[in-house]
Amino acid sequence: MSELYGKDLITTQEWTLDELVEVIKLAEKLKALIQKGEKPPRILDRKVFFMIFYAPSTRTRGAFEAGMELLGGHAPYIDVTTTRIRAGEAVKDVAKMYDLYGDGIGVRVLDKAIDFKYGEGQKIMRQFAEVAKVPVINMADDTYHPTQALGDIMTVIEKLGELQGKKYTITWAYSSKLRGLCSIQSEVLIASRFGMDVTVAHPPGFDLDPRVVEMAKKNAEDAGGSFEIVHDFEEGLRGANVVFPRSWVTWELQKVGATAFGPERELEIHNKYKNWRLEQHHVDDLMAKPAFVTHVLPVFRGEEATDDVMDGPNSIIYEQAENNLYAKMAVLALTMAKEIPI
Ligand code: CP
Image 1 (tube, protein in one colour):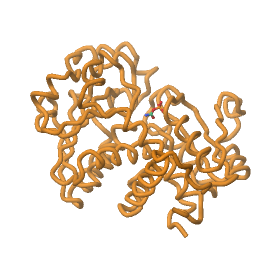
Image 2 (spheres, rainbow, N blue to C red):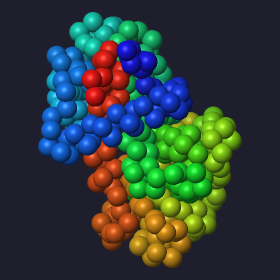
Image 3 (cartoon, rainbow, N blue to C red):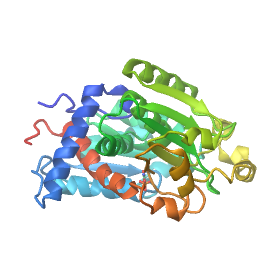
Image 4 (cartoon, rainbow, N blue to C red):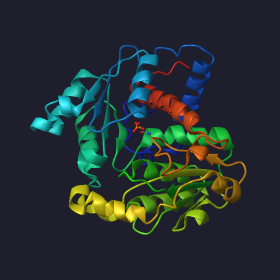
């Protein structure tokens, strides 16, 4: 029986390295099968995975829904605005209902749904996990996006092979929109866990959760990699094998929420750093060879990065998005099936 059967995935930090590797290995097998044109076995035959969305999604919903279908199960999409939650029904009662009706629960709760108040999404996620006996899978909250990180590290491994000694730069990039930290922090945690030299570059004020910074340092120490934070865009990129350019909001905003802080005030801060935009010459002149440009998507083209670089020879954004389907399928299979017959 899979050791992961019945287990929640709230953050990759709560799974062992062996468990994370098991997900990637299964994702690779599923990918190989599907790319050969074969159907994967019905590992989740007639199982139901409820997907509870407080916030919108292009990829995560599509990948989980397609993944459940491919594994023989079903993934009902629950938009919380169509439930009784907004009318005041307690989260614990809602969690109990989907626990009774299904075999797994996915929750997405972040950004506007919690007015960018850091920790509120994670609190709701933990409430679901506390009540539900079936596995609860974090489909992105304000703090973590673990299945994204798994698909992304799978892609980096495919491209680079051995990760020890390879530099992964996660850089703040300009955007005229507000975005939370979950993907940033999950990338930092997984890349440091796999022994990469991780650099986070951001202008002053765009700090990560200090607890995540401590975890990343510890991960790097344990795995023989390194972790650093720099405040210069070009310095961050120098010698990087992988770059992920993405915007996120200031730590000050996240302490009080977007409404209290003022979205206009936040964007005035962003506007000071419009030159933090990834362009092809940065990749050519500053990064190591080979160099890979990644993004969890959506990317704000022309702001975070130019079309040239996102559509250019170093970009692996669509391969990364595809691998996210296989990684999510692997998480679903390993947490919701007793046996994995491949
Ligand atoms: N990367 C990601 O989570 O995309 P969506 O917000 O579209 O699901």
